Each structure stands twice: as C-alpha cells, then as structure tokens.
Image (spheres, rainbow, N blue to C red):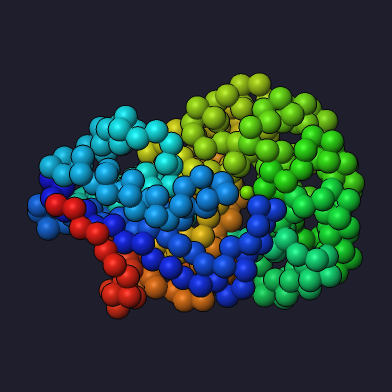
Length: 368
Ligand SMILES: [Mg+2]
C-alpha cells in the first residue's frame, strides 16, 4: 500500500443563504479535497473547509500546503497512519484544516483496505443513535425567531443559535426565540469568541433562565485567563470550541477547569488521529463532547459520524453543514432521516465519494 499519487482539488458550493456568525457571513463552502492513491489500486478521499476567520487558513493556502505535503508522502506506506501524521506534523506547523483532509483520506484508505466501515475500523458501535441539531444564523432577532420556528416545524430535536454580536442584543435574541418556540426545546448557543469577559457575564447571566444547554466559545480563543474566571461563575456550561484545536489544548483547558465541555472538529484537530486523543483526554476528565464541522459536505460529515460512533462521551451532534448547501455532490454516505437521525451504513471506509461529474467543474493538481 505505497502512496503513488495524490490529487488536490479545490471545490466551491454556494450556500442556500449566507451562514452568519459573529466573525461575519459565509456565502460559499470553499473546500479542498485530497485523494490518496496507493500502488495496489486503492484510493482514500478526505475533505477540509478552511475558515479564514478561525483557522487562519484559506482555500488557496490549503492547496499550496497540500501540494507540499503530497510531495513528502509519495512512496510512504499508507498503512502507517501514525507515522505519516507525525511526518506531516513535523514538516508543517498549524494548518489543521488541510492536515484533516489528508488524515481523513488515510483512514478511508485503510478502512477500505481491510473491508470495514470506518466506524468499525475505529472500534465504534453502529447501534449508537445520533441526531443532528440545526443552526440559526446570527441575524436580527425577529428573523432568528422565525428561523427557529421553521426548524422546530421541520422536526429538528435541538437548535443551535449563533450569537456573540452584542451581549444586550444577544439576550434579546434569545428571549425572542423562546417567546416564539416556548421553553421546552433544547437550545445550545455559540458566541464564536464574540464577547469579552464582562459581556459574557452579562449575556450568560441574562440567559440563565432560558433553558440553554451550553454555550460555545463565549470569549476569544486566546483569553485563557478570562475563560478560567468565567467558567467558575457562568450559570450556563461553557464548551471549548475555537480554544480547543489540539489534544494539548484539551489537556491545558481541562487541567485548570476553563471549560465543562469540548466541541471536537476534525478540521481543528488535524483529523481523526488527533481527535481520538482529544476524546480520550475528555473521557479521562469525565467531560462530554460535541462534534461539529465547518462547511464540509456530506463526505466530511460522514467521516465525522463514523468517528462519533466510536466514543460514548460524544453526546451532542452539530452535523448540519450539508443542509445549508445548494447542492449535494456526494454519492453514498450518511443519511438524514425524517426525525433527523443520522445513520451510516456498512460500506467499507467512509462509504462516500464525490460525484465525478461534479468534480469535472474544478481543476485538480496531481502529485506523483
Ligand atoms: Mg462553535
């Protein structure tokens, strides 16, 4: 299973409407695909969605970095995942997004090679039930309330609400949503680093009675001290997202109790190999996790679903990014059911791939 060819393809998919978070709107998913071929005729596919306001990576940057990484992987034995990941990490700091695409392709390749669906390759349990939430963009409060109403009518079991613009207005947004849909439905919120310490205290205290499951990223990722203080007093559990990219981040934050929960994203950890370390550290600390994504297609979300089947401390699922895209270019893979259960089947590997007709629209870079 020697790697003899790697293909890098930047793709673009328009979103049905702009996805708005405190960092600004996203109108298109500009993702980068990695296909790794081996000399025995096997192929693995991975995907990443670089978010410039969160990763500091761009699509152009992921393509350039991907070409460099591909050069050093030609001739490597694809079965040696950890050794390859180590080589990638040694040659390039940061760049978690493009690394995740390589990692995903390697896991797909290896699971296919032994004829196992990825969840089973990761010792997961396909009886584990997974239901996705649906995300309400950061908009004017009446629009958000209307969206929340629509998603309740669509049958989603839980909503995620984007906040982090302004503490006072954010409280008003949540009150408007609760007035529209009532108090019963589970809601989680995400400030995407939009508040400072004082705004976060104000916002979270102001929402204390609004039945909020947890709050992601109330403070800037770098405000470690603020997070430590906030977690001691917040009436709402705090989930680390942008503050937890790596397993070292997970350990550092959990060691001094800055967060109660972790949002694991393959696009932050650099893929499955390191994401397993995060889940494991969280498990040792008695911490529950969520899984989430950037704007990956159903391919990336299928890989994430398989991963989620392998960890019983992952209990929250934010798997809605494909639902926001104007086209679905993926064949096979995860299925959304009417009650928003998400399932994967027994196809070996991730069990999904891009429609070749869709890929013809984009230029590919081949390294061999
Ligand atoms: Mg988040």
